[in-house]
Image (cartoon, rainbow, N blue to C red; front, top):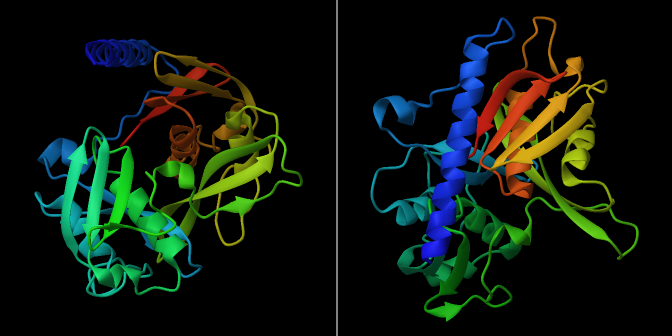
Length: 296
């Protein structure tokens, strides 16, 4: 345990050092200046939470919400139930009405929740389990979920659950050998607002996941959007101390030499779901452009 803590502290220190070094370089450079986005919670100490709600195409969408401090697990269950009338316009809760959190326990990073019998009143158990698991995994220090109903393990889902279950799954493989699982984030525009939609793809592809992510984001996906144009190429990439550096050609930038937040986030969120890194750092032709930090 002590070794794990020391390793975590070491990695965090190195990550911060790299970011500060990059900030210093950009401050003294005439190139594009690094932009860092201060979230509301950094300024006002009001925290936002992320949950997954349904869109009109029955896909789970990542959503930022405000929840009252304390009783977060109970509040997430309430927010995801169909009786909730506080969801953003165009998004839909999916847990059966009157579903309640009876109790919960946490051991290390595993959260066990015990729900009322109403949780079983569904014709799409897989969808609501997936949405609930992904929503609870957004909580700090939670890596695994166990679900019980009235004190008994949920049938067919009685094992420990995490993001390995996949979300909004697409099966693209043509044989059962060498199947790779890659999560790619797209955008869904709902009432002129951007929401991020993770899609777990199962495919036969021997390339590195980061290469697959970039290529997949250059193609449309049903009603989902990606703003990455066909001319964008990932020139090279490297990982250093929990930071993944991505070096693209000039077509990542628009005519004003900027890159949109939506493009940065779809790439970065995809990286975070596939790689154990805390920062994604963007470059074009080896010039520093921007970064996205995990959980931002």
